[in-house]
Length: 215
Image (cartoon, rainbow, N blue to C red; front, side):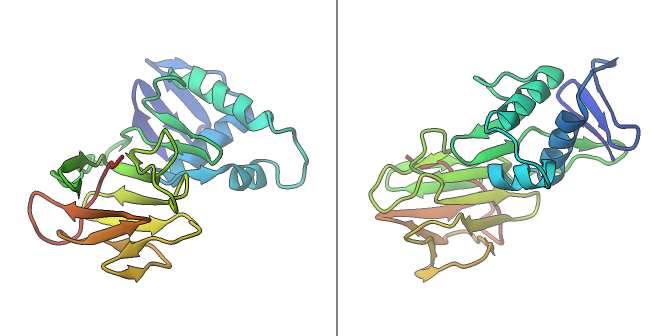
């Protein structure tokens, strides 16, 4: 797998990462972390899942994963305070959300005009993962009672948008029905999270698609 993102090229075959053509020194564990995040993109990986996959038979301190993430960011030239590639999801995990091109394959564009309408507000959604919840870093910030910090997410893909509950206590509802698995969204769908009612809209007004931010 040879992937290009930002100023970097990641080659899983040669186990090499370059930035602006210069080979970056990464420890084997940091390289594996970057590989896991790239493979899962744009899905956020929980800390426990990362621990289980990076250190399946060992106990490590809680600081081990943040140290690897810092090593990855230093190698790819990302800034933890203003991330463009790797995002920290507070008390949850990490996600690779930057644009990635598979070398030799044209990049796919996400559908245009995906947004959430919340009362008079219109919240544009970005390609990839859009977290909905009470966490300050959530793209769709919903500071209501009965809403979890990382309550749900909308993943915007080139041809569709998928809504998924993230194990919230009070559930995520699509068109009045509580969802138990990822489901596709269509223009005009109502999404209920706590007392918030959000309407998913697309510029085409048809089919499935992506994206949203509500506060």
